[in-house]
Length: 257
Image 1: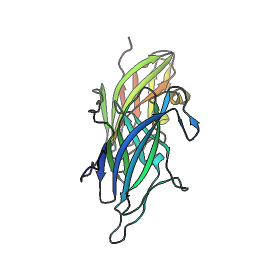
Image 2: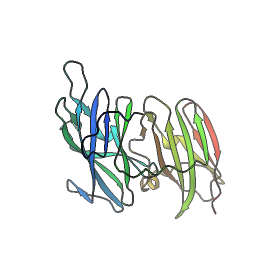
Image 3: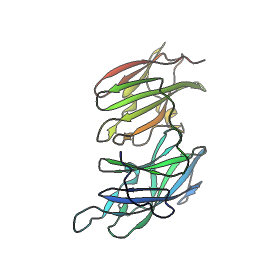
């Protein structure tokens, strides 16, 4: 992961510079409507104003284009992760950075109403950059109850388990160890063991969570994200069976008071 170097533009919240791109984040605003789309209950739009220019190419610079829904995201306090849902895109659905001219753009993220955001992430090829969006020191993640390293692909972190209205909510984190993105198949990779056998993710209940996994469930290179999964079972689960790409692991779950 890189933060870049160079002079920070006046009044910028965060700034990165690589051999391909120079970008500054200028402001964050929150709305309950964007382009006539109203947010669902409990959510809000975070609109991040950025400016940047392409440095790609040699003697003649190239236009650099990014698909925001797959290559830009915000991280909220505690490490929860949300891909962009829109922005000032071209007809091809991309954010464009032209050479020489510093262009202003905006990115839009749907995040929980109760959350603040701490950083903007941008992936350029297999390089990941983080721009600070606040002067406050980001709140870190809690200490993991258990961890498991899946070869050189990722590290799984178990943060907790709670019961909520008949659902069991698993709080997890994944640290990518790969130099390319990782695609996660949650239904096949995270299975609970309980008194009534193996329990798979309840996709509808998981989708209703404020801290659900990102869509698409792609983890950028060498990035740590946190998320929750929901399960329905008649008795408290006792362990998590994790099916990784290079290993398998059964992790004991904490008891629920």
